[in-house]
Image (cartoon, helix red, strand yellow):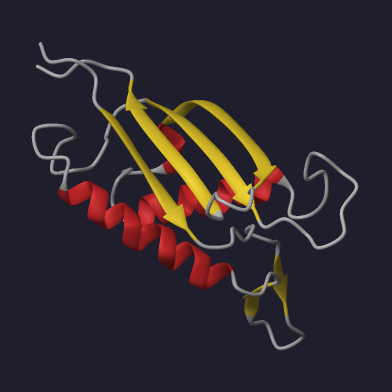
Length: 144
């Protein structure tokens, strides 16, 4: 038996939450959040890079069993802000959905339903910290 595999990486860029879908009066479905597609593509690109480094870990670089995920979002600090914590939009659950979808599109997860344990937070980035998200994925099953 091998030990569980852990993959961790940082995705730079301003995190954008995955908004709700709306339908136009002509029947076309569209995403309500601007910039969502670009953020998800950025996450998928960094995920592909990490997937290539997972030789000997997940099968073909893709997790197919249950995993534990951790997302630490670092948001840009506003010019005027009295809050210590970013208790404003975008909300954390929508940020998580966007990253989960990027991990699936990037091929690191076979499906986002494989995440059985999740921890997440959002903070303001300091002057020396980059804006983005720290991602940690850890397999929960040992592979033969």
